Image 1 (cartoon, one colour):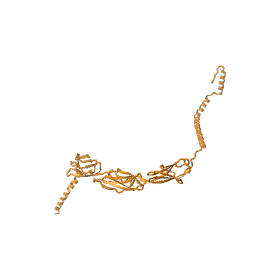
Image 2 (cartoon, rainbow, N blue to C red):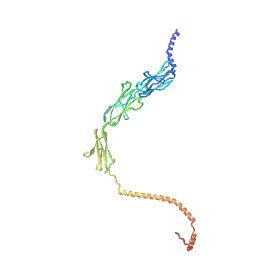
Image 3 (spheres, rainbow, N blue to C red):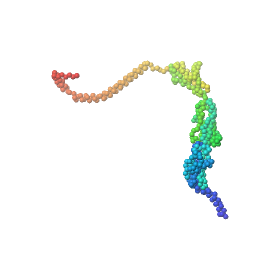
Image 4 (cartoon, rainbow, N blue to C red):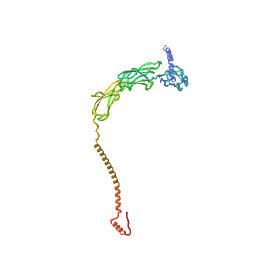
Length: 396
């Protein structure tokens, strides 16, 4: 009884596993492909391969089950879809200018017995738009608090927003996400609140959007802010060390936003004020010792006033060289020049004597060999005298 009862179980087991066993024995006929991710507007390539095609052709279908290509034959009239490669073992196609609507599951089929298929999930990334910043309306006052809002739409999946001031990171609120009306992309927004200082005048508040579709490219928007603050001032003398008899300018260098429009000059212990003007300089045409003292400059704008101080010490006049010292300097220069010329002359004379000394000694030696002795000279002299009556010689 045990053996007959086991037979139906074995038959059932064989029936259940026969299809599986058939699939395992025919794995080479199973096509394969891969999932792809593409940025909207870009191009995606769908590649399907099979080892054993069993004399059949490969086919690509879109998510709506419309046939795109069957072997080398185009089935759907969409110029964006092009054949890349078609062989018995491979069918590759490309889709250019991909839209969000192209996202979905594409099917590669081979019409063997049974028909075998492979799926490729195409994910289309929505590119976020350039962010916009709102909330800044006009100039801010020093120590005032402001809130700026940044927004970007069209991202898929939702993008992230970050804030910075120049190179300094600002900690804004967490990015808020809202689905766009198309049901595929998202709009993201973020706010940042901070207190401004005078150093923020002219600074750029930057909102950047971060998304995988950008592949590291920067997509940001900057909002330059203006900060109004009270002025400061500093007094700078020209020349730096004034002396009696010189002309002196005291420059009151005012800084602020707005720039100071009025300068008031005062001297401690002197009434009334020296000068009130829109120009920042106080001029002393001819300094005297009596000008020494402490001077104040008050720089004023519609944001307030600031007073700077400078202590003026008038130094003695610069010493002027006397005429006698000038005369001695001239004489010294002339003497030095003459000594220099004498040295040059002595050097040339030394070179001349050295070069001609050897020539002179050589001529002297030759003259001692060729010169007549004393007796010969006397005889010649007498002979010349005796013959003087017949012939006279004149030597010039």
